[in-house]
Image (cartoon, rainbow, N blue to C red; front, side):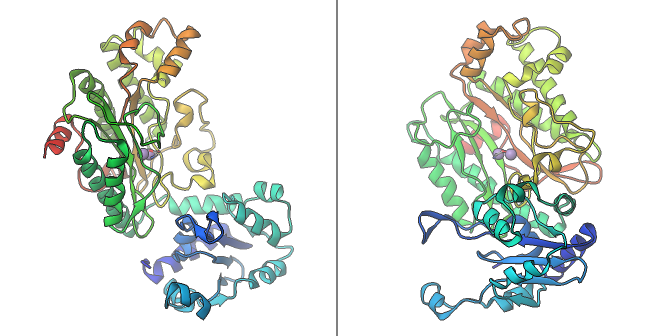
Length: 462
Ligand code: GLY
Ligand code: MN
Ligand code: MN
């Protein structure tokens, strides 16, 4: 089990108490989740907020922090000999909890009396995203599940966001490691892919690289010759001549920090002129967005600037016509990039999304748009020093969407539907990096990962 220093966890909890002010903070850890029968589990993933404050990466724990009495309690059971028969000798929970600065360890079931004794006081909890945790909260607090779902603590949510949004140097070290492993996954995928192979053969090499570095994938690999399908987890296609592959995959390292990287490359190792034209638009969107990043900049404006660049380049190619500014305002770009430019990243790929996308990525006075594309922008608010975000422009040709708009005669003054037919088999391009906001600008995390068409071709040839 890898941990930060004891002081890190003590300081984080002290700050949390200050931010929340009063009442009891209840933080349930995750439990094992069954796959197809009780004892066959999905990979265990601890809750990220529990990890942030308590560090212990194992199932079946709960924690409470009393903001008034200052008590910090961990609820969990020591392994018995019965357990040890199956899992071997383990470091005791008492010893582990001391390593994260907790001296008050109580048996699991004493949480019931603890919460019962808090009757009349405010118990702060985060929005539950697993059914077992929802049920536990419902039982402990003696409230219906509906009530629990609506009753999470805004004070606690905002306090956690206030802390977890800013990455410390020790967290950045972990994130850099995750990005570097992700980079190797991408380089190995570029070298593995070849005309005639099946997608799953290269996906296997991606998983192998992660595992060879003591990591898992932070999310199921999005790897497909159908890059126009934004979150495509099907890997059964043969990689055929003339196609490109979109690979969106990232490692989750041993301390559960995530990388989220996308590269797109030609199956045969050489971009055609048509592929290079579209690829270079996306590359330009990505690099110019990253160059513009700095504190206080509204990320929504970065999204819109990259949208404008895309529209003007598509106009140069003859796929769009008319006034660029007008097309940006009307949302014409949503046809080609129906997702947002990026999101926060940390322990979660979409960091803290379980606390509410708008609470993390928006603020009072900054409403989320309902326009295709912008509505999927998870981070719209001003950037701040020590945020880590993704920058992931994309350009896709989605025949179903194009046909739908065409049938509706949508934006027909702007869109050259006839010429778009030449792109129905093109797929899509996305390029994604993870970027730290610094005092005066930004810094791409990790070692460079091949990105220009020349770099990608050279990597694939080697
Ligand atoms: N990997 C999912 C995303 O880029 O948001
Ligand atoms: Mn991604
Ligand atoms: Mn992403």
